[in-house]
Image 1: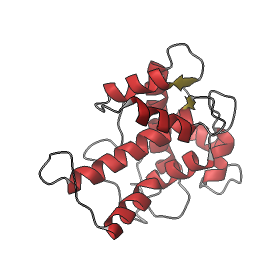
Image 2 (image 1 turned 90 degrees about the vertical axis):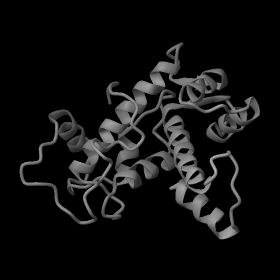
Image 3 (image 1 turned 60 degrees about the horizontal axis):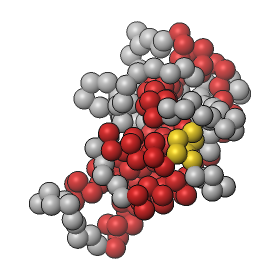
Image 4 (image 1 turned 30 degrees about the vertical axis):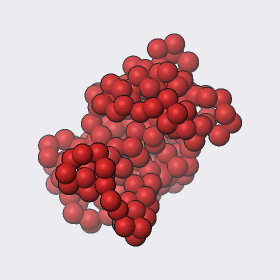
Length: 199
């Protein structure tokens, strides 16, 4: 996929509203030729839907490896309006644009063009996104993202980190009623947030 676009954490234009589950796109809905071409290449079984396995087979990170299972499942779930575990060509176009936006963000911080970002680059990325994380927390994120302990984050893991942090931030903000940066949370609410933000 090519680089392009800007940052939009929800991957939707307008007010962020999606069609209700099971709704069909309007008869005159158009999919860009590029997105349609990519969809046809990724939809290996020609079912008219793409699952996370098909998506994984099509996406390569800067290390020359396929995107992780976690990244592909997360991205499919974000655009799977009917909770079928698959996306159609219209949902794929939103995902396609979303991935290209994140590739552009990633490329901005991958200053040496290595295909991954290191701790200092990740710190800069989060700082420019408005987060002030400690070096210890950034180190924790890198270690969680890089199981082989290379101390670097590939583009797929960068997307996963950004999406999860964004989801947790929104969940936190909803509970931070006094806007003082602290919340009191019940155990089940905590579990709901943790499980809901992870997939």
